[in-house]
View 1 (cartoon, rainbow, N blue to C red):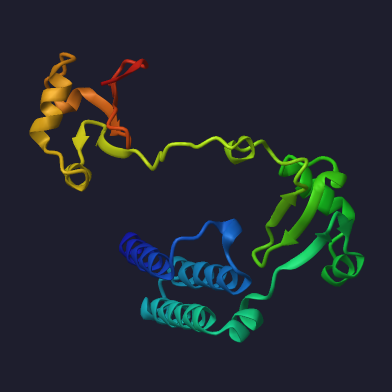
View 2: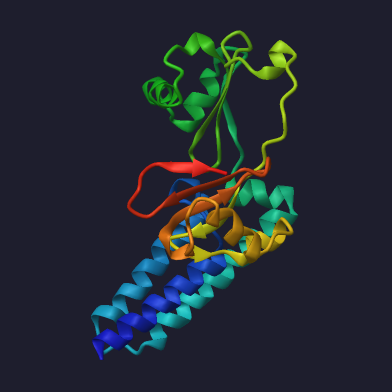
Length: 228
């Protein structure tokens, strides 16, 4: 009985979290974090106490999910509501200077700011033009133009489009949907791999195709890959 209740609650919580959207813990807005914590507590109570009806845990979880989805929709449609629900980003460094009033309002001390700047690879505050504390608590840093990494545009160099390589095979399993995206067929891939003595997809740990048409592959049990 306990096993069945646990599995039902697990599936319910997993379904609810999927409906609520994909977010890392560090990217959750305050109201989203509160909902996630409450859902965890609501699921734990009927899971531990078999005397509590299962619906007593599932119904509040569904209500919280509906409230979270509604708040997310409202915040997406209304800037004013978004400011109330999620808050607004706070500029803590502006034009290379600490914004003392904002730091005091946020109760955000300078040591915490310096720690986060070091984590972003900016150990020297003098290198920072703007630092913005986002609504999810993460710090966004805009360095001074003299301190930013060199970009091809700085040297007036034109670069080619790279795009994202398409995964074709993972652990021996062929992704035919990605093949269709680039107007290629299973037969084409068979011929290309056969050139290298590979006669079975199951032998391939990973294979991908980049936007230049180069095929990368790696066989199972062999760390060295290859390009076609």
